[in-house]
Amino acid sequence: MSENPQRAVPYYCPFCAGEDLWPAGETHGQWECRTCARVFGLRFVGLAQALLPPEPRSAAGSERPITNPKGGPS
Ligand SMILES: [Zn+2]
Image (cartoon, rainbow, N blue to C red; front, side):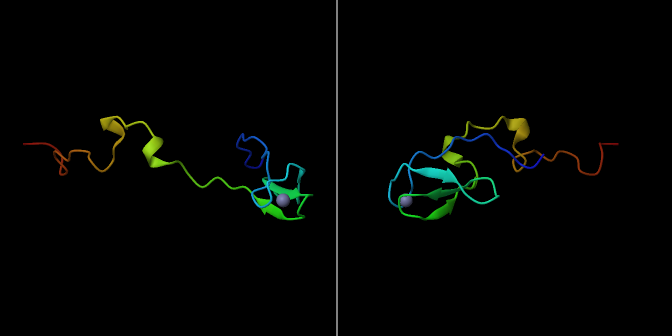
């Protein structure tokens, strides 16, 4: 299967706020507005950092303490 992240359909055209939207093209996430005849695409860009919960300390790669990079005291 190709990439198919679950996402809802857009309700309004971002250009004219029309509601007559239909899937356009063969690429997932492309829509055509039959009110203003524009075709646009929706694309997932990433997550907003401000909304993410704070990571646990073990998952923070940059703050991982480096105790013994060479291997242990001898
Ligand atoms: Zn439109």
